[in-house]
Image (cartoon, rainbow, N blue to C red; front, top):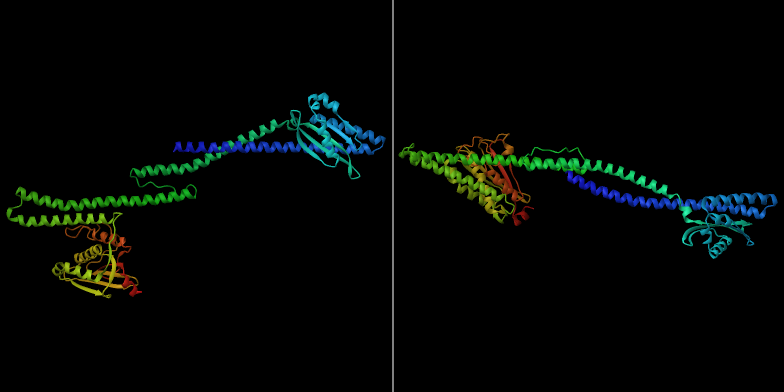
Length: 483
C-alpha cells in the first residue's frame, strides 16, 4: 500500500509540477506583456503631455512661450532620464526640435542606428492625425515607437515622436520573474501538501480494505469496514464488502455445518455396519443371529446408498451447467403413479390418500424426470410423518397461467422455530436424526429443482398437519384456456 501511495504521489506531483511550470510561464509572459503595455501607456501619456506643451508653445506669447519651453524641456529630460529615448517635436511648418544631443551623449550607438526614413514615415502618419505605437528594429536592437499628434483648431498642428530601446521598456522584469517563481513554488508546495492529505485520506480506507481482504482470504470472515468513512463511493464499497463478508460467513458456516452433517450421517451407518460385521467375525454375535444382523447391515447399507445418492443428486442440480429438458405432461397422472409406487408403504400404515384434482387433466410444462423427484420426495415425506391410519391429500388446481400442487398430511405439525429451516440441507424436525427418518436432503432437492424452473416451493400455514405447495407453468394450450 505504501508503494501504491508513493506511485500515486509521484504521478500527482509530476502533474502538479507540469501544470505549475506551464501556468507560471503563461502568467509570467502575460504579466510581462501587461507591464510593457502599462509602460507604453505611460510613455504615450507623457508624449501627449509634451504634445500639449508644444501646441501651447506655438500658440502662446513671449512669457507663455518661455514658460512652456522650460516645462517642455523638463518633460523631455524626464522622459529621456526614464527611458533613454530619442524625442522629436515637429510643427506644421516642418520645424523640428529634438533632444538628439542629450540622447547621443547617453547612447551614441542607439542614436546612430536611428533611421531617418522610418522616422519621416512615422511623422507623416502622426501629422496626418494618427496616434501610433509600434515595435520595430533599430539597427540590431528592438525598439518601441510612440507618436502623438498635437491639435490646434481640431487639426494636427504638429507631432511628438518618441523612440526608445525595447530593453529600457522591458527592464526591471527580473523582479517580476522572481515573484512568479516564488508564487509558483508556494502554489506547488501547497498543492502537494493538499494532495498528500487527500490521497492519504483516500488510501487509508483502501489500506483497511486491503487488510480486511487479506484476512478474509485467510478465512477470517469477521472483518468489517467502517461504512461511515470516506467519500460516497468508498462508503458504497464498504457496504458492498461487508455484505460480501456476511454472505461468505454464512456460506462458510453452511459449509462447516454441511461437512459436520455429512460426517455424522455417514459415520452412523458405517459404524453400525462395521460393528455388526466385526461382531459376527469375532463370534460375539452367535451364528443363529447372523441373519438378523445381516438384514440390519443391509438396511444400513441402503441408508448409506440413499445418502450418497441424494448428495450426488444435489451436487448435480447445483452445477452451473445443469439444464432442464422441459416437456408437456399431465401432473395429475404423475401424482397417481407416485401413489401407486408407494402403495406398499401406504397400505402398511393404513393411510387414506385423497386426490383432489380440481383441474382434470392439468398439463404443465416442466422437466418431467426432475418433477417426478419432487413429487416422490414430498409423498415420501408425508408418508414418513403420517401416523398409523392417517390421511394424505394431494390437490391440483389452475391459477391464472400456473398450476398449483399441494401435498398435505395430518401428521405432526412442524414447530414454529423449525419452519424457517425446513429447506436447509440435513435439517429435519426430528433433531435426533433417528435411523430411518431420512437424510434431510429431500426438501433441499425439491427447492433446488423448483428454483431451476423459476418457481418456488413453500411450507403453508395450516391449522393441523403439514402442507407443501409448489407451482409450475401451465402447458401452452392449458395456459391459453386458463386465460
